[in-house]
Length: 158
Image 1: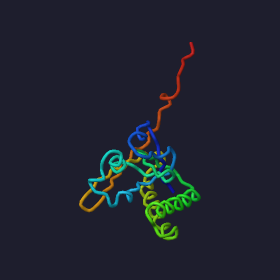
Image 2: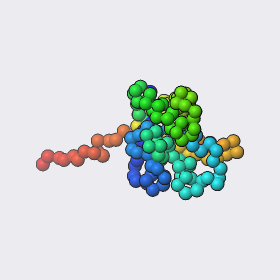
Image 3: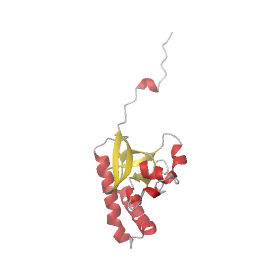
Image 4: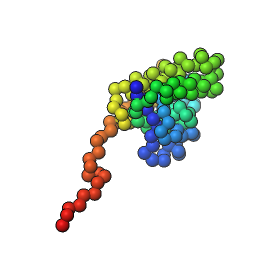
């Protein structure tokens, strides 16, 4: 199974999100955070998180880019527990037992999003408010094979 980890190409996420996700932590879209938002909620760093932020499942911070990678079953099980606990502590889910299926479904949706992409594919998310609620669209950027010339210094014997 594949999921995605937070990646950073530069330091910009530290400046645009209230709480940036840590490089390497597992991430999901996390659009549920915005389910009852209105245009009035969309300003400053909150707007940036809404517009294109993935949710890290360790810090519950946001990140602009994620990369597809393989996840081990034990890691997946731990993510379900962490996300379920987040639903209880922040969103008032009645219990871990009630929250686990919802957390598992969030991760299943992310796994489905990653399933058609090879490892190291970069994903982005774009959200907008519509009359029907939050609309999410995704974009992928395939990893290109790097040519040896990009990394090696060649010398010609004299």
